[in-house]
Length: 485
Image (cartoon, rainbow, N blue to C red; front, side, top):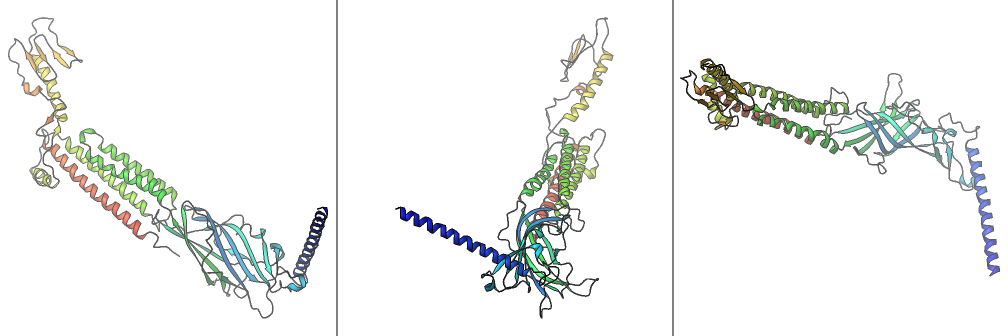
């Protein structure tokens, strides 16, 4: 048993010793390979590696979209977390693996080798064009193939078209190219037809629909040589649920409350105030949309147009309610209705809006007859005999009656008469019904007001329905189809 333990210990110790020696040998060979490749006598990181019959260096550009950090629509700026992937062949960074213990690849720091000056043309980052680009290492193979992958967060311009907000789709364009080298020195190629989105993290507001890469050759006024670049299209689609629940649905409900302004009777006194409240609410929602979206006069959002039309309809409904209230409180004794109005509205339009009969409260008549009642009281006091000094008129506010020694006039219009002669007062002038009584035959102005109210309600409902149907049909049928590339 002791021999077995001793044998196992010796074997384990020899294994560690061999691995340590082999590891040291690998390290020495890697150090030797690095020194060989980066020898200043054969390699200069400041010079583009073009060897032999090569006329230019080909750089392949690819990227993976990792995350949408934020899309600031008001400033039309997007921040993306991407993984850049650059590939090119450095003819100087070649070696024979058999001479370096069969090492076929090596990792070299960024600052040690030549790296193409790939630039994002739309970048608006204050720190760097592509931050952290110089903090990673390049992967080099024995045939001179160099792969430089690095992660960065770019801040770039993204033109936001908010015509169909919040059912809109956006496309952000990224242009990568060399800032110094022309097409005669560096030729750019796209590493595939699209970017890698397999590792994309889901965003709470935007979904990444697709990407597209294509090569373009541009000519500028400064130089006669061509400048190739790689254009990346990133297609985004907004998730509209949040805005539907918080903006569109409340706006639609609040606009529908304007209908209640036509249902309320004019005597309630709340017709215009309700509609003004709705108007103020729509103004608040319009401000919310304005703060969210950029100031773009070329692509005005349909949602803001819908709010504007809704506010216009609410203003018109307030004017209609004012007309109805003005007609309702016209006194039939002072204003006689013209026969044309009577024929047009009370006869013809009345049937059109399905108004058969109207029963209204006699509140306005009560006010008129209350005035007549006080006039009758004064007339009675003038004709009452004053045969003793104790005959005094007493007014009781609690019982709402007027008393004398021989006459009692109560608020219900009845006169108790005892022994004196005739009083030249028409009793009907002081009789009036209780405020909760219903007039069997309302005056013509109240009937006209009711007909106008019904007519205006139909007009408002018609225009409001047309506006809502047009808005939703446009938003649901055309959103995302018109994207400028």
